Length: 491
Image 1 (cartoon, helix red, strand yellow):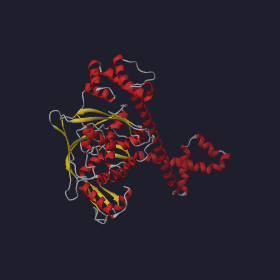
Image 2 (cartoon, one colour):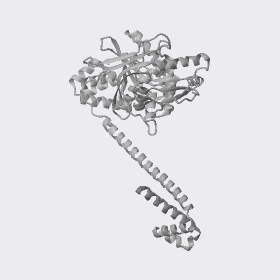
Image 3 (cartoon, one colour):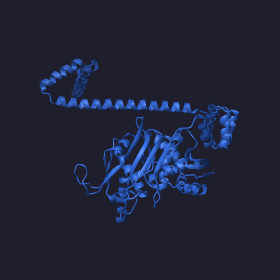
Image 4 (tube, helix red, strand yellow):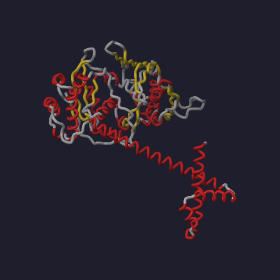
C-alpha cells in the first residue's frame, strides 16, 4: 500500500523555533473540536514492568485542553520560551488577549478573547502524571517521575509575583516544568509551517520530525512510525479497520504531501503487542524535509543538539533490526526474513548502505530499488564507482566540523585579544592624560629606554620631526598598556 505526493518547491525555512524533546513528544490536548478523548500512554517491558507512564487529567470547570489550547501552547508559549533563551525565566509575558488573537490570526473579538482565556485556564489546570526518561542537553539520561501542572496564568490587571500590576497576560512556570525545559535537549522546527497547519497535521509534523531528522542524518531512505503509536501520542481516535485508518491518515497527511515534506507514504500490515490490527507507516523525506534538515544543520544555522528518534517500541536485536530495515526499503517481509537467515548482517548492511548511496546520487540507475537490493545481497555486488562508505562520510564530516570549530575558536581568540588590546590602550591613554609634565617626562624616558632600535632611530631622525609627537604618543600608549597587562596578570 503506498501513495505518492506531487512535486513541491524546495523552500528553506527561515523562521525557526526550538522545542524541548522531553515533554513535547507526549500528548496534552485533544485535537478534535468536540468531545473528549482519554489522554494516557503506558508501556511495559517484556517482564511486564512499567517503563513509561503518561496521563493527563483536566479540570471539570474549564474542560479538556482542545485545539485552541494546543495552538496557544505550541505557537505562543513555546515561542516566548524560545525568545527567552536558556536559562528560561520563571515568568513570561504573552501579551494582551488582543495581541494573542492577532498572533494566532484570529479576529480581535470578545468571543475569541474569552475563548483564549478559557483555553489558557485549560492548559494551566491540566494535571500530568508522568514516569518517563529523557536526555538532558549535557547528554545524560534523566528520569522524570512526578505529578505536576506546567504553569500558572496571571491576567492583565492582576498582581504579579513581587506586587506589580500585570500589564498583559503572563504565565509563571511551575518548578517541575521549568527544571525539565531548562535542562532538556531541543530540536528545531519550521515555525511558519507549524502555524500554517491545522492541529492534527501540526501534531503529526511535531512527532514525525524526530524520525525524519534521524532518517536524513543517518542516510535512511524512510522515516517510520506505527499507526497505533501516532494515535496514542497525537492523540487521535484509533481505528482497527484499514478503511477508516487510511481515511483518517489521508486527511492528516494531505498538507504534508502538498508542501513536499513527505514524498511518498507506504503502509505495511502488522499487529500491536495485544494482537490488534496495526500499520507501519513509512515516509520518504520530500524536498521540504531535506531543505529543513540542510537549513537546521548548515554552518551558522540553528544547532541541532541531538536527534532523538521517536522510538516507542523496545529496541530490536541486530537480526530483527536488519530485517526491519530491509522492509523499510521495500523488500517484502518474507524475502527480508529469508535474506537475514541466509546472509551475514554485515553483508546486508553494506549492500543497504550502497543502495541508499546510489538512490541518492544516481537514482536513474536503479529502476526497482527493492529488487536491486535483493540481488545485491544475494550476489554480493561490488561497491559502485565513486562510492564512499557512510563511516568514511561521517569521518570526513567530523573532521570538517572539527576544522571549522578550530577556525572559529582561533577567530574568537584573535577577536578577544584585539578587544583586550583596545581596552588596554584606552586605559593607557586615559592614564597618560592624567600625568603632570614631570611625570610625563619620566614616563617618556622609561619608555625610550625600553623601546626598540627602529623606534628610537625614527624618533631621532630629523626627517621624522613632524611625526615625533604621534610616534611618542603611540610608544607611550603601547608601553603603559603593556604595564597594565603585566599588573593584571600579577594581581
